[in-house]
Image 1 (cartoon, rainbow, N blue to C red):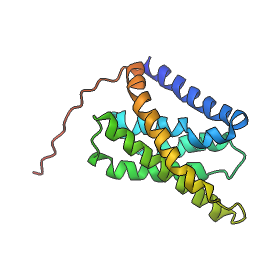
Image 2 (cartoon, rainbow, N blue to C red):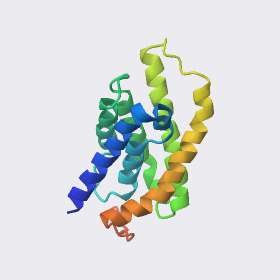
Image 3 (cartoon, one colour):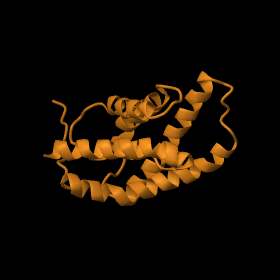
Image 4 (cartoon, helix red, strand yellow):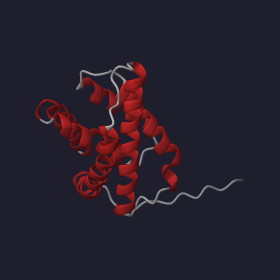
Length: 171
């Protein structure tokens, strides 16, 4: 049953991302539902699947909804997933405020990577100056959404807060 609920959340996030393109093109730059889902998967998933592969898949879903450079969002999600997988064990994942700050920082990094890949592919696109002004707002909005949505998603998917601590002993 949890798989059905998770697939429902994936479909809802993808359709929200897809609908934001024609209705509010600027709003899609501020609110990134697929990235929030990706960050939730990275922080609350019990499986040890590689996060870069999950990010690549969700980035391909985001790329499918746009008419822009295909693969840029997938590569930027994969880069953030690799970073989160490599250094995520150092982050306190139980405190929602610290988690929201990290999600905000990672969303800014993802948007920066996306802009860099877009400009690298086509220098005439030009990542304008106003993107540097909107990047902190994007980070704050995604961090606030993570602070508000992660407990609701945890309750919807029925994920307990208990985590087992694994102690690795060299023998």
